[in-house]
Length: 218
Image (tube, rainbow, N blue to C red):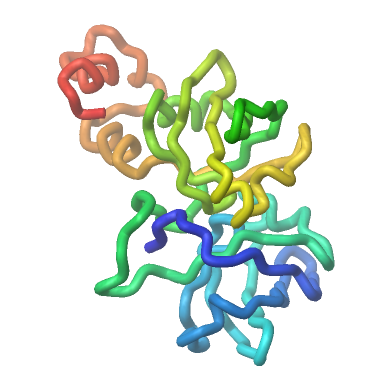
């Protein structure tokens, strides 16, 4: 489990591609402290297992499903990546619950400055938008952020100066893909409420997403 608080920006040093998978060699320093082979590190929000450790790098395998569902397949040598070690018992919890199992990707539509903050507008598929609510939590390339508002096919987040400095989010350009992990609470509520894709907007249900919002579950 992760918190969405990025520890450092790593750099892709090499990619060894197979027919459908890849081995990523990532230059880093801070996240290597106390890390052992077999530990988990979030790379742009994707939980990967450390397979090799060097003095200033580690390697991790990216499976076909990971490359298909995330933006890791678009990485190249020299690409910067957000890194976070898995949470350990006794660590401070500063963001929100992030599993490292992303739900899909969104696309940067545009960014704009708002005094000392940067607003980022991200387009997203309806299959993910259903889990994104105003003032809810979301992980974007592994960064824990609060949703400012949700519109028809997109949502906005506001990035504070510290996050801008310590992550790669504000270096993204329009059209770039970002990894998205929606709030796990929203997904569990849907699951426990017995909703399927066809039932999600069924107004005949006694329990609906509107009902849950109105009664303080979000």
